[in-house]
Length: 108
Image 1 (cartoon, one colour):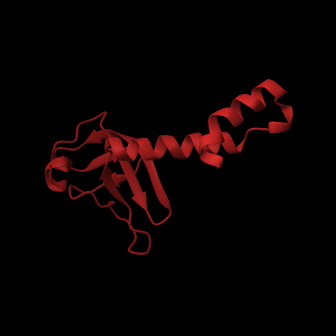
Image 2 (spheres, rainbow, N blue to C red):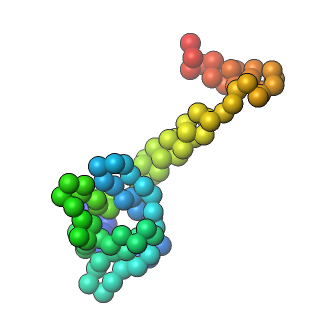
Image 3 (cartoon, rainbow, N blue to C red):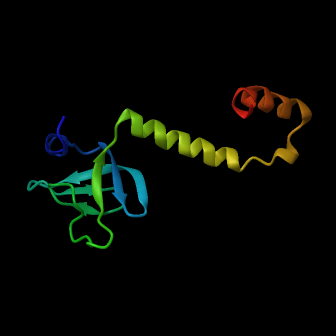
C-alpha cells in the first residue's frame, strides 16, 4: 500500500509512529478533521500528507506506518532495555544458571 493511501485510510484509534530526528514513538490517532488533519495522543497535529502541522525544518516530524516488523523492533528494544535493568547480584544461583543456559547459544 502506498504512503498516500495509508494516510487516507487512517482512522481514530489507528496506531502510528511519530518520527523525528530524535527517534520514533508509537502513538494513537485521536482525531481526524474533515479536511484530513490528523491529531495524535500527544496533541500534535499533522497535515494530510503526514508532515507535522507547523513543524520545524530543523526537526522534521512525520507520521509513519506501524508495520509488524517495526512493532517487533520496538518490542525488542523495550525487552533489551528491561534486561539492562536486571540486578544480577540479587538473583539466586538457579536463576543465574537459567539465564546462562538460555544465553549460552548466543555468548559463545
